[in-house]
Length: 486
Image 1 (cartoon, one colour):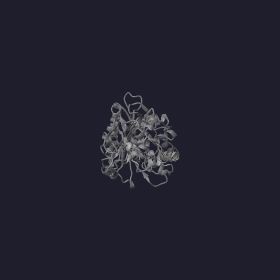
Image 2 (tube, rainbow, N blue to C red):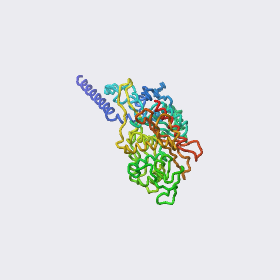
Image 3 (cartoon, rainbow, N blue to C red):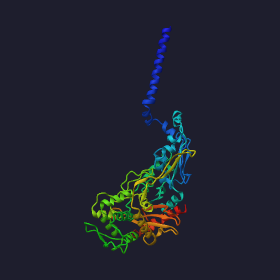
């Protein structure tokens, strides 16, 4: 009898060992595969089991949560959704996340180890702390001014603080409400299909992801390259440029939209946006030095993050001399995001130094204890010499005070700007893009406080009358006024 009991005990011990080995295999060997299995809903259920942390603008939440009382319990909500969509992005139970919602997902979802003093405790307890808070650099007044200025027209605005790189406004128009994508079900899928099928592309973040020919706003880069290289030593000296200008090696004549550009100085060419003069100067600077100058401003850099990724702005590195002439005035294959052109204006305003733009000021725990701070990082290069920056500041002020950018003038403030009208399409048949880049300094401020870039795709005007001054400069002025008041 005792023998049978002993055999039974050994058999039970063997079963227990097999059970422990099976559990260990599931937890240690097969855990990742089981977690990744589409049929396993535990991770998704846990992700939406508690409210997501807020994204802040001026210290106030622009996101929230709604208790759906469904299996995936908490859905994201957005205050003024269309206004801040280019900043927040969306957090969808169906389609994932984008922009700040994606870049700071672990903080907002409560899974970042920095949110808890005892992260191992939460791991053992299979719990997680409350979602953290993400404070952005955006200022509500500037964002609202930019959004109202575009008034639904296709285009974008990017505004930065020259001395730090803080992104003060980031607007893309037309926009959309991210809240329509937050949950699950047929309504969300219909909204996704409708937004992606809309020919105006409301989900495209034009400020970060769309690249445009920058047109005459790029002449600031060309002028900086010429001054730094010593190709131009006196900005007021005649350049001996014919009007029209024969593109090198071709029979093609480059005309001017402005009058009085023949033999104009570089100062006059910037003030009145003379294509011929700046194209000739670009050829004189040469391909190698033009490429180097553009890259010092941030062109050809595919690694920019704010923390969302930013499309690369392009300046060709292999061109003929006639192509270089067109590229020097922001045409041919030259392309730039609005954020990149705001960086160009900011570099001039900041004495030639480019600051890396950033959108997240700080992340904190739910109770406000800091997790990490954002902060500017120099791009590791100076866009131009300080003396060149000072000279360009003078030239850009001339554009606003007595040139093509008078609609950007602000009483009591110093404003420098540059207009641009960028041709595009087959045979330049498309409606030109209206550009304006600028910076502004308050009456008693020691340094410029804001730099801005505006592009309007569908400027409502006669094609011959479309210009950065009429379509884009008033929007830039409104944004700069809001910054100076703040």
